[in-house]
Image (cartoon, rainbow, N blue to C red; front, top):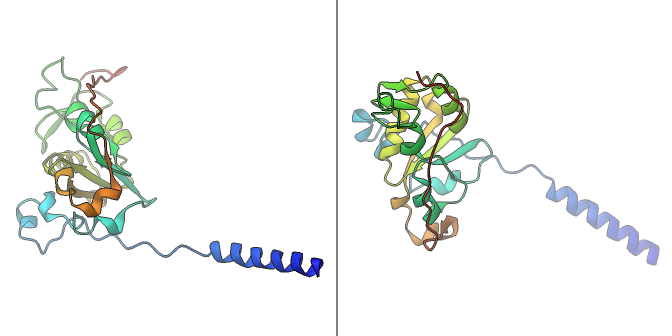
Length: 203
């Protein structure tokens, strides 16, 4: 009887493990980044209001291995409250300042305008690709979605595949209780960040 119990237990464990190793359900297919049925898409296809993924359906696309999740706000704001999965890449601190190419005290990668960005460093495009991978699907958010639209203009101008870049809006839109479980909320922490870019050559 004891031998039968051991064999039975082994069979149950095998069946249980086999059941747990079944293939995960297929992930929901990603739509095109811009929903062209929206009126906003015609004027600004990179605007949060024109995005196909937003506060109404971001739940469907959380936690994917094939997506990079990036929050473009300053680290201080990110530290106070952000969505899980999203990493901080401060847009105005690292990526863009209109005067960065003419003012040597500015450290950002690009000056000029978002639609005609001027690289500040010989390595600007290379560094941008480290921050926002060129060959990956990327979900971008900020506080309202406006910084994301500017960033998307820079990415387009510098040769990124815009069929992989999504403006999912801003943290200000993700305040409903249903997002509480996905939000890291630490208002008691304050951060004063100093940003720098080292070992690069200015153009």
